[in-house]
Length: 341
Image (cartoon, rainbow, N blue to C red; front, side, top):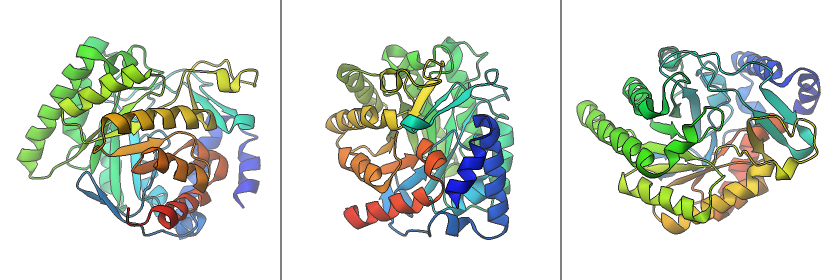
């Protein structure tokens, strides 16, 4: 059924199709069909970061930036759903077109630019949701905020979402906000993470509720750079790392239509680069939870991500190409191979 829907959706430009597909899922949710579309809910519980995940398969940030579709996405059988990236103030993002399909490579290129309705809108949508699963909220900075003051935007979002998030992800790795990736290294990284950890601890004490902090990193790093990032994560008591965001590399898609578009490349071409980062992170951080994302388009790919060292996995581009049934396929594969581990 999804193959037919995809053939129709792919006749539209990618961003329009994205909106139409989400509205279609909302309708399926109202008709009570969402769990069936996802292939049935898989119970494979695991405890990480002090949280209980019903299974190891999550939805990556970016698909539902404003938490407008949280109920139906949660009903598809995900073990957790990450919404955002959200910024303190609403922003339109980059001009359209800004999302491109590369179907021969099972890939997408986006330069969305953190388009979102602002953190207050997201908070209202999460409060209105009936979804009772694990919710991650991914936070970023507004384009107009100088990189030197980025910490102010992250702290604003942290304070506002703390009461609702089960975990909070600090997005430092989108290639579509100028200068953002500079925050992944050196004094920038230590200063930002130290401020967020300190404020997170204060909010945890104030509310009596611990909310873990995760950091999402890029795949475009050397082994030495991964080591530097890993040491900073450990030094600042970060609870988890998400590996990885999109890549700016184009070697894997050279010559394909849209391959030269600016933005972040996701999907199958990021599968091996993200696995390489995960392997290196696991070497440096043997006890830190790792959420693996990048190029998971089958149960076998989810198993490979787990074998590389990921404790949990997230879907995005594979979900676009394969549809909701990928959720159950990946969850069942992980349960069959790694149940209880």
